[in-house]
Length: 220
Length: 394
Image 1 (spheres, rainbow over the protein chains, first blue to last red):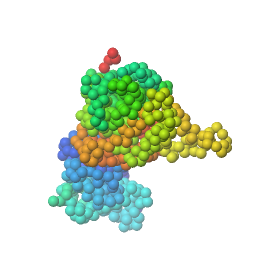
Image 2 (cartoon, one colour):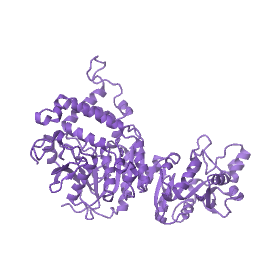
Image 3 (spheres, helix red, strand yellow):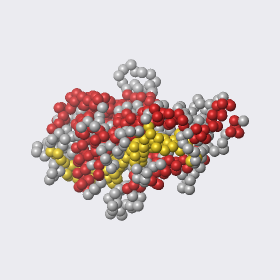
Image 4 (cartoon, one colour):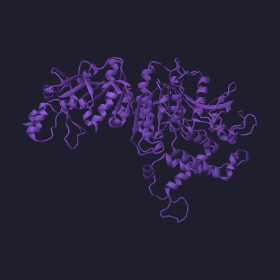
């Protein structure tokens, strides 16, 4: 029964827009003002940074933990530092960037609360996206199967996943409240990374959204 | 001034270019002394393009010199960075105008303690003013002025060369489009100063050093310099690299001799490193260059805040460290990177996994090459270098 729930899409074939860019990155890109200074934390192979440099003429920097990712970024001509979101964000000055982006990385940090605090300190705005552990089929897998859900977005077993701090959209909203962070904009995305027309945050967003995408800033 | 060269200097100058600088205006050194005239020996590869936008300065480490990509005039060995520089390689003379300048205080053609003091006609010896990394870089900048090179597409170097790269970026940000400091730090650590002091004391303890006047007395503190080199060479390697290379293997024998012969291969190797080094290096130069590294502290020149050295710098940086480098460990490079970040610099940083120690930057390290190539390609695009063709050979 569980196998029938498995969607036929993996992150590797996430939908791509007309320019060949991943739709979820294009959505993030729409949140960024042209010509701004951007820090992408957990920038991977640099696809988002390159998209932003090309489409939005941003002045971009990245932080990436894997040497392979850093090498790919540097080879693309991007300015990327090998580093760890958990330990290195403290060295960045306040408001050094217009945007601090954390795309699909929050759940893999050891201390999401501190990381989130740094993001809204370093960036005048923070853009955060993460897989929603509250989406209905994840809930169903745990309820019916009684095992840690393995999905296309979260495709590794509990004992080998780098995702040590999974949360739901509602959990994330709670953490923002604790940290006195203002949610400027919230959006849920479907499995392909396309925006869903649901009021977010909210009950249905948490039940039907595959990913949450938030634009945040420090509340005054 | 070109008379009375040492044998090594004569061979070096026959195989590279040089300029006499500081004739009208001497070089004001950090110690307060004025040096001039002074000679700067340098080697070049490739041609400067019409836009003068393709110059790359390679800064050499302590015990290397300007013969970065051709046969060494004294040792006959191939250039020390031929893995990186040469036709079809990352720094291709077809594309870049590559300059490597023998640093001030060295002994391969540029003025150092073995040169003649103009007022006496005798070797400077220890009367030669103590020079700093900053002085070296100012002398290099003076040479570029002399050559009519307004700015550099890239300054690249490892170890002491990396210190020069950082000094260049801090002192002449508008003349440095991109900078690649490898396996280095923005200051010399207490441990590194300690290692250098052991090396210097080994030289000074050699009776042939004669208080630094060995050139006048016709002696050479070979044993002292060799011991200094042996000690330093250990710091350039790593436990794992030494173990892999030598383990506890015996040298040309099956059993220990129960003596103080070089029973172990590692001993024999170090002795060879020491004795071959003295053929190409001057003991007093070794004192001066290690001192220059000891005094290096970029932050101290900027109110103790390293970020101030790079505030609003337009230079693109690519900082590289190696996991097994215990001479300039990764935290040193990270400190530089954090300061560059705080200064708003455009910086990339990679720590390369290797067990080859500090010397990894001189060895065949594919990750190093991949990163430098990627960085230079990106910087070249930003500089519009791909469009510029090298000038016709004259």
